[in-house]
Image (cartoon, rainbow, N blue to C red; front, side):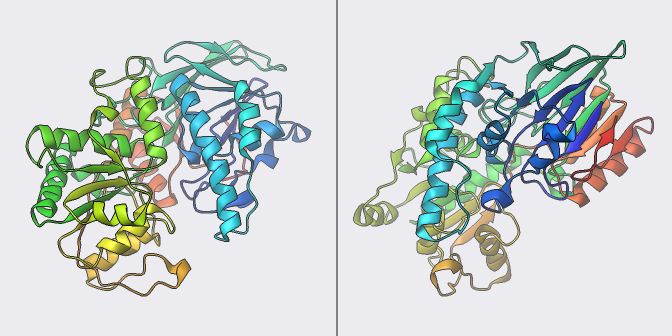
Amino acid sequence: MHYLALGSTDDIGASCHYLNLAGTGLILDAGVDPETDGVESLPELSLIHDRMGRPVDHVLVTHAHHDHLGALPVLVQQFPNVGVHMTKPTQMLAEVLLPSSARLQRRRLMEGSTTARPLFDADTVEALGYLYEGHNLDAKFDLTGARGEGEVTGQFYHAGHVLGAAGVFLEVQEAGQRRRIFYTSDTHLRSQTIIPGGEYPEDPIDLLLLESTLGSDEEAEQTTRREQEKLFGEAIARALERGGTVLVPVFALGRAQEILALIDRYKQRRIIPDETPVYTNGQMRAVADLYDRTRLASPRLNPDFEVFGVDQQRFPRSDARARQALSKPSIHVTSSGMLFERTLSNKLAQQLVEDERHGIFFVGFSKEGSPGDRLQRAAAEGTEVILDATNGQEAQPVRAEVARFRFSGHSHRQDLVELVGKLRPKKVVLVHGETEAKQWMRDTIQRLYPGTEVILPKQGVEIEL
């Protein structure tokens, strides 16, 4: 059994892992790095071409975030005989998100915001879609490769991250011995607003591929979701009482739908006025439709809840109507979550940031140097901010209330360490995290479970397990 990291092992982007299980070649996830464009954003797929003695029989996509899904069309074109597996909701999301990604890449090239040629076009995505096989949770499926020397089976477990997200359980018959592998991908042990906490194998496993996204985030383990929900509701209420507008930048898949469910709860509990208009935009609305269509067939805390049951309007496209929507107390749940340049969130933030009545509330992570990060730093330090450096914008004073609330779709590090105790693996390979995060996870796991071997992989360096 061999493991090879194809994506970066020093950061979170471009999640992609190769496993050779008794002659069967598996790829776990096919993501792109959202911080780069074109071929620079891809994992190192050249490491696994057949000419290097590494077969590629199947790829398993754990969920529809682009850092796990976005390179899939490229991978399938390079390996046209590969089997592609995901949960049925992820398959539905891929049919929406991948064509959207193709259109966005083309638009960014045409408007001059990138020089990178698109990785694929919408026609290619549509042509490849028939290859994707959707599976129900807990249903076993065969993954044995054409040159496999032992049977390999797969099974998806609800990951508690976003709609359709799954951990991957693998079993392989190797040299007369049955070996058990579990890949958490992005996982959350605790319930969110819509999605319940993750589920995991009951019996001990041999190898655990464990995410470590929040491994260096001490603050995450010191907060509770209930506390954050209370503070977030109070912040929205304050801004509305001032006669202000609330901007909530979100990621279109997962966080957007969870935040809408929270806003609905605040209205029902009279934390905010029921008549407060709520505006949404773009891709998150298509994703919300899939949340609603799958509510009876995928894990939910309340299967009766519908995202489009929350009263909301599409953000106006005309400038006059947009100004009117922003002129009265209202809530705007818009993408992107990090306020990237030339997005609606960024444009709205520019209009709101200088007015003390308004609130700009982050509900997720903002990468260092992103416009969202710059705004939060400027608010904390009392300095000015440039939200879109691509168009010659001047620095703006930050007078609006700016705050961040923790609604992560990832488990904090203590929960991940406890998951190691639950699964009792012989070996742990730490993935999907910055170096500092993985080092904390390694040291803590070794201290608490001294019989468990912990491995920090390096991109392109094959490990025999």
